Length: 102
Image 1 (spheres, one colour):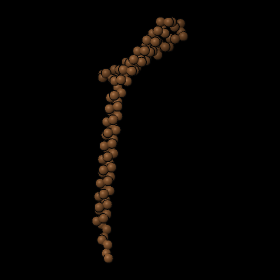
Image 2 (cartoon, one colour):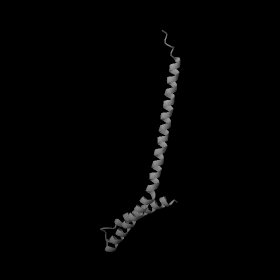
Image 3 (tube, helix red, strand yellow):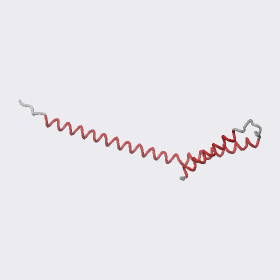
Image 4 (cartoon, helix red, strand yellow):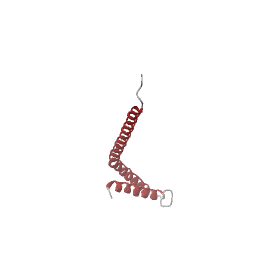
């Protein structure tokens, strides 16, 4: 597993633990220790989320830049092809018209 997938997996797991512990709030096993445990789990999840953001965002930005570049190149090629097609048709249409007779 890549470290990015591991980071996301760890955040998902931490969130699942938080949700399962949070279900016990207000029940018979609710205590100060449980609330401290929730606080620790929440802080850990925030830390993991910030680490994921710091690791993944630069790669996503590069990927988006690359996709924009690729689409721009594709658009330029289509425009160039359209222009050359139009210029060819214009040249052919000029050749087909008979010269003016005076």
